[in-house]
Image (cartoon, rainbow, N blue to C red; front, side):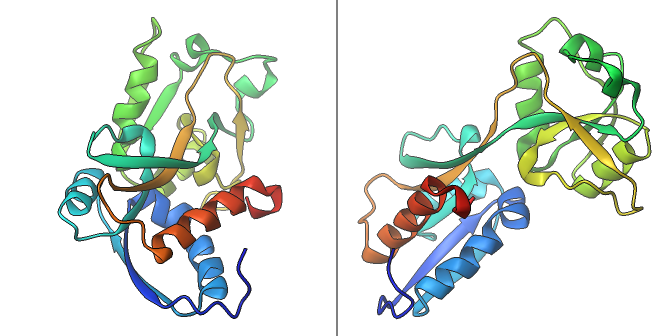
Amino acid sequence: MPNLESTLTAKLAIAASYTVLGYFLPHHLMRLHALYPKLEVQLFELNREAIEEGLIRGRYDLAVLLTSNVSNPDLVLEPVVHSVRRLWVGAHHPLLQKQTVKFSDVAIEPFVMLTVDEAAQTAMKYWNQTQYQPNVILRTSSVEAVRSMVANGSGVAILSDMVYRPWSLEGKRIETMLLEDAVPPMSVGLAWRKDLEITPAIQAVREYFKHAFMDPRGN
């Protein structure tokens, strides 16, 4: 990795989705700034469709987003990290007494469905591969609402470790359990237009993430 006296001088317009900007990117932007103090990053928070259009039209140089949702053939995707999805339950939930938990156990519980960043569509993709359906009592774009509902014992959820925090805003505990059935991880990565010139600044960001996640201390 380059030293703190890096002389790389450039501007980068980086688009990011809500989840990535809220739970992943700020820490890495801080580290990038320490490594490349003359690299100026302009950030834009957008949904996936707007990010894809902006990359294609050249409004943004790079994007950091949930790559599993992207299928545009004109974009290059470079995975960075895969965040495991687990079942979230309140601290005293009966499911915590079970050795293993399956979709059949979750299907009979009241379910809180997160909708932001296409989370609901993603969830239904893996639910639809089973013979069960979630008993949805609330659809919300607020991760904090999900956290509170689960911590209060009002429902359960399946979300990634990236957005997990052990306490709700009310100070109540949230536990997680790994489902025995397969649940795909939430994949986060970089994206750029296929014919884009890879400038030194773009390459620096790519190399930063490559090294950050090759080294366990960087995760």
